[in-house]
Length: 209
Image (cartoon, rainbow, N blue to C red):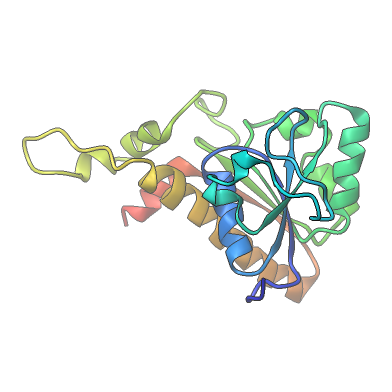
């Protein structure tokens, strides 16, 4: 696909919600997005793109415009495979809990050593550190604690939850995509990559501006 991001290669570590949506936005703008999937998943196609995707992708709009490769991230060989892909990538995006990528040997330090120009995008609910960093969370938690949920709806009535549009997608995916796009401009000018740490709670609070 042509677009302003044509020629940009993105590695998307498979996940749900805001990570895939961010990857979809980048693919829609012309980036070559390769999703790294888990073994046994129902989403796998070969990296050359010649094998048709399985039926589960037909109804997953966030998979559009992407290619998929299956890698066992828990194996030493799998980590080395990802690092080899990192060497040829411009962007990596991941949405695991803090510390997971580091335990896999695929944290920012390891990846930037292999590719100093890499833009490393991270998506969490609460950020990489702090009292809630390791806590489970969902969209409604993020928009509640940020104060946005309470500002919705009519006075004297309970606020209507706005699906997952404000937290996951607005405060999360779109903020990460914006940060990645800005970092790509910086990397083009300076030759140096960086880490983009997007937290859905922070992004949702920013939307409240």
